[in-house]
Image (cartoon, rainbow, N blue to C red; front, side):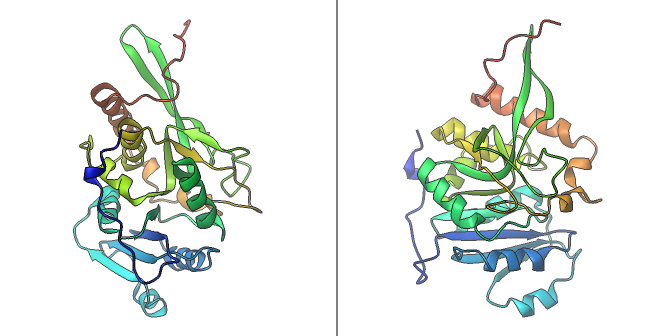
Length: 273
């Protein structure tokens, strides 16, 4: 079970209605203004919004002037995918919501996910993966990380879609979770700081505190974690990089073999081939 010695005492600002700190990132995409508009129009207002910019690939000076009540953090050091999870260590609200730079949520997503996180004690993401494995003489072998896509697997829809609440091995795109869980994230050393931060979050929370990752039911008209998933198919998409999936498979094997992560398909039957 989670040892609460590693969690900070809860502290709150004067804004007692704000339960969630939002962390946005800026790299080479130009969706920040649209993201901020989507965040500030949520049915449940966040406690704070932090914008973390790594490098100077995009000029956001006009956005800073337009949204001057938001906190901006700039780093000339490329901390890649894990940098935003380092920032989460400094969050003072009860929950934290971290978004990829290509995610545009519907207006009620924050409220719905925060309530689901509280009620089901789960990480909430708008998309996720169920890891595909086969058994052979050498043990479990990953067959394809993109075989079971939850939330963003429907090619006919331009937004995330999921018929029913679904547990996944790990979440993608955006993650809403209790801030104290970030101490679980850093209690196990990541296999690499170059990739697989989404996998590491779900795995560590599951290993140390049996906290699942859930992808809620979604539609364009009721609740959707990403209304424009095609933003993630541009030329800077990380999943298009050479060896991107290979590194993620290595991270998964590390978490399973060295830290006892039990994936959902752990009892899959051996292949008859």
